[in-house]
Length: 216
Length: 216
DNA sequence: GGGGCAGAAACAGTATGCAGTTTAACCCCA
DNA sequence: TGGGGTTAAACTGCATACTGTTTCTGCCCC
Image (cartoon, rainbow over all chains, first blue to last red; front, top):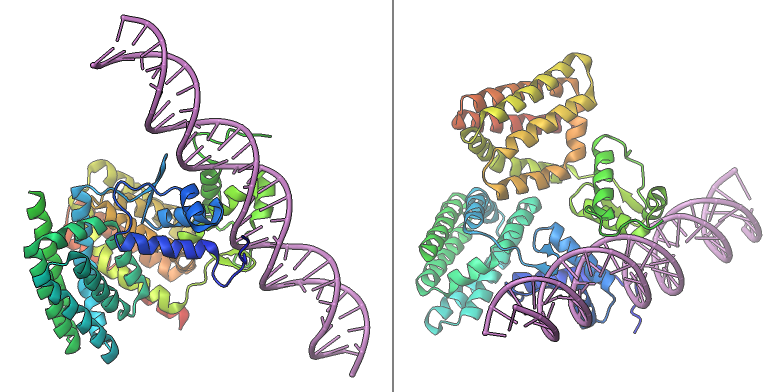
């Protein structure tokens, strides 16, 4: 049963990456409790590397430690609005930098993601739409040269994961999001930093309005 | 020898706080290697809580893990400049919100901190200056109603800890920082959100320029 | 005297076990 | 049938031990 303890990437890092992916792709539900023993059994390792990964995720803000396992942070409406404020401050700038640094390859990939997202407008395939949107998001973020900025954006976006998921289920928002992606893609294609920033700001504000509508 | 394992504050948290204090008060040198075994022996506990604390400090950016113990981080110049970009984006807004939400009590506390910082201009007492600056910073941040914004700011500031410490040792920067604190305090006192934002932006840019001068 | 080279030591990662605490289920009595 | 107390299970925190790797040290050969 013994794996090589010092394999290129430690168990701790592998498990951290795996759990992060699960969180970011909606693989962890709101009422799920992540417990080291269970995860360790699932992955065939001992508790310690799993504990390390969980505590690291908690330190990074992706999880919160409770007396009974780790769970997703349960954001109040006020906290979600706080995140929208952060998004308004950071994402337009990030989009501008991405536009300036956009390569042909990356633009083609983003174009593909947007096409896929648009295709779900008729089929109403929410999981596929979500997946395409994730591809678009991670794609343009990868073009941003400021890694600190990207890390910051990724962190708080992870925390409002479920909000974004519910927004995507709304048909009206679905169309608005695809439209925003299309416009952003066009701005990226023109290397139009100003246009990308403006459109991204509008995109975030539209998202905030959709959230406010959904809550009342 | 057995302590209560579940005493109000866990060993992990105690050790984390202790090491953080050592780092922040210059108790850890650039060539010091923090090793779990040695620290554990020093504190009379096992490796695990020490390891937890060290890894948490590393996740927070106060330390970096090397193949041979934990050391102070040596951020590249590019990474530090990335953080300055984040600061330009977030801290003016945060200062504006703090100005709007400023209370008399808090303003008095900030005033005290600035007076203490100014007092170190002549004495050249860097540790006291550092402490006063920390009080000023944590004080105005506490007035910001958006907790997500504050958390984000705190997180990246932790990572450039050492840069800020070296900046404070420079007499010219020392004076510039105290001047900035004085102006910010005045803006806070007037509940002048616009003025606070403007002055904070200038403050960050001055810090960035000081850093660029120091490096190259 | 300098450049490998082998052995030793230091150190990170992981496994396992136990103690203490919290949660939840259950049972008893009303 | 419901409320309160009791007990079992679940889970975290800490300790200890072992393994494999990396770095250091000193020695030998050139």
